[in-house]
Picture: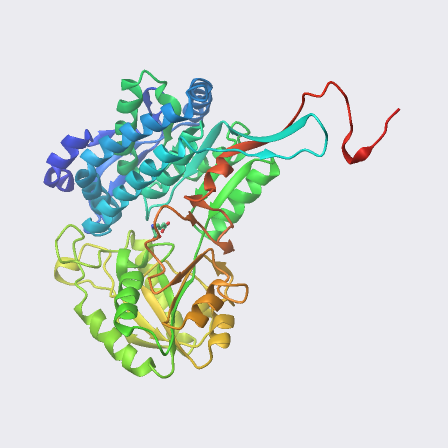
Amino acid sequence: SSNFVRYKDTFDRLNIKEHNHGVFNGKWAGTGPVLHSVSPVNNELIAEVTTATPKELDETIAEARKAQIVWREVPAPKRGQVLFDIRTRLHAHRHDLGTLVALEMGKILPEGVGEIQEYIDILDYSLGLSRSLNGQIIPSERPGHIMLETWNPLGLVGVISAFNFPVAVYGWNAAIAMVTGNSVIWKPAPTTPLASVAVQLIQQEVLEQHGLPTAICSLANGGADVGQTLAEDRRVDLLSFTGSTPVGRRVGTVVQERFGKSILELGGNNAIIVNEDADLDLALRSVVFAAVGTAGQRCTTTRRLFLHEKIHDQFMKSLVAAYKQVKIGDPLQSGVLCGPLHTKAAVDAYSKGVEDVKAQGGEVLYGGKVLTEGEYAKGNFVMPTITKVNSAMDVVKHEVFVPILHTMKFKDFDEVIAQHNSVSQGLSSSLFTRDAGAMFKWIGPAGSDCGIVNVNIPTNGAEIGGAFGGEKETGGGRESGSDSWKQYCRRGSCTINYSGQLPLAQGIVFA
Ligand code: UN1
């Protein structure tokens, strides 16, 4: 394909071919239907990847479980070293992998590279974590007894990742799952299979160098059927799913049915509140990055903007001016800030989103148009859009995964917090203020009800060190940093009696 030829050097360095196997279970396989990876810039083929048949998927699950039996005996700090070697290989290919992500997903190159960096960061973190997967010692009420907590691996962790972060979100899960001694089976989005093959090749090479079973990192490209099997199969101890709320609700229910564990990272409806005393320059730059960046296709994208009435008009003027400066185009061209939407279906969702605003009595203040001329003709390009709505309208309650920013005016801080919290999603939120009272209220019990609660930074672009995820219909899962690693482990509460007597807890006498 011409897309392939154009980036042939990159593909050669990553060992990606025009036709690739998309299943890995210690060896490469995949005789199921073929996925066509297409560039969102021109909707033409880049390269092809095969998927797993049900039998191949079954074998992949079995091989990944077998590999874990070896991996769980490798001391955690040694596992950390293996992960660090993956980190080094990823770093060597950072630019190539970032280019591939930009080409296949459609995000701009700096964000593509940033996504590889995010996997590198969590691998760094995992090396440290490998020496601090600490349990605790708990005082026992009984003489000659000690209580302690153990954290052992669950077994096999399934990761279903989304198109918008085809590497980083897998990376958060894979790094933490592996450092805690699990094996991993990855089902990527069907529209970003090339990124998965490129990352898998690197991981395979490192595991081989260490003489470890390569199925510790397994891969099963495929469609919803592969996801369904991972949700149903009892051999998958934990399933981490990133995607839409409707699909996540089904995945969570199916996994729960068999009392499996799940981590759900679903839709967001993130807001920025700009208070009257805010640094407006910081706020403006943040809103543009959070609403326009990644063409509105992050789960942390800002979709709602609440402006204090005292700064509203001035801020809106600067915002529209800033949007006018945003260069839209090929994500691999320097200077471009807004690439295409990932698919044609997303363009339709965008058009419908714009129509809904008008139908519900809102106004489109900027954008609202699909771009179809010249360099945009073959791609999925739209204009980042600013609307004027009120929070009673239905459009502000739903996440449309496109760059439409709904703006609203407010007077009172308590009232805006209530409006902010009135939607069913609860991922990320930001307040711009210089008032310490407002800041602490915002992060306290009467503040934002989201999993990510920021002050004076955008809603997107979280670091890996914190736990990432959200409340309500965002699914409740937490990935990445802090103590998220505990979810990839089974906790043992152990009581050891070294007294030679048998005193019972609660003082019970049983004789
Ligand atoms: C996602 O959109 O699924 O906080 C993940 C951020 C990134 C991760 C986003 N670090 O925007």
